[in-house]
Image: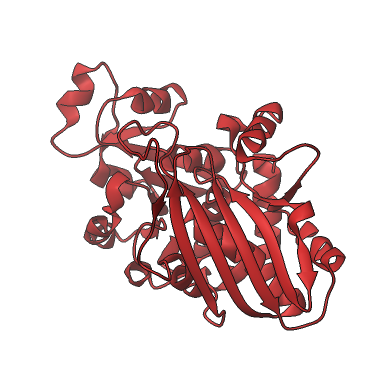
Length: 333
């Protein structure tokens, strides 16, 4: 069965989800929605995606010479599932519209867990979303943490996690945000990221702290875990190496800038790095205590998770591992 996917919001995440859906053999793009006629709307048309707009703004697009297929409400009638990707964390406001349309809905990590009732990560809880009407794909940071925690928990058991998140200040295309020349501590301690991980992995003892740094490239995580079973650094490397969405980096890569250069050299779309990038040489285990560094590409690591969430919710694949493999193959991951 080919699942008809519509995307409400065609920005940083929405356009990436659209491209990922378009290459899946069991999915198709039935429409994307934009609020204003900018270059992204033009690109959607050029790619052949049916373009829908907010009711009352049709003339804005027509005046810009952009052909539209109708309103957002019209778009929802064409889809089996909507992926909600609006700017500014306004996704909760769209829920009544989705309820009225009777369409399954996926929100992003900027929304509260309670909105959907299920927070999703493919490696951690694929089965929880199976056949459900609503789900929330957790944020880039929570995705990155959940991937490695669930993998190591399955192998060794995780007693507790303590992590420091060095967060990028803005995405590369966001010209309105900073800081330019400052490091900003998040004074709420622990930060919200730890509790967000527990929406996916409820049994994990995790605390996080965060700072915002003047870069647009990636987040950097400094992770400390206490494992329940004795193991070596080599054991951890072997287990993480089996996770297809974890990439070890080294061979002269000493920074997030070089990881982004690697993505360019790999000819990745938009230089996206969908995997957690773990510095293999940083992995150190002593008396069940693990330390490692990982980099997370905030614009893209949630994209394959959205695809797996679609597949689980629409019951197009019962087995999470098979869905991950299908997604990875189609995306070239």
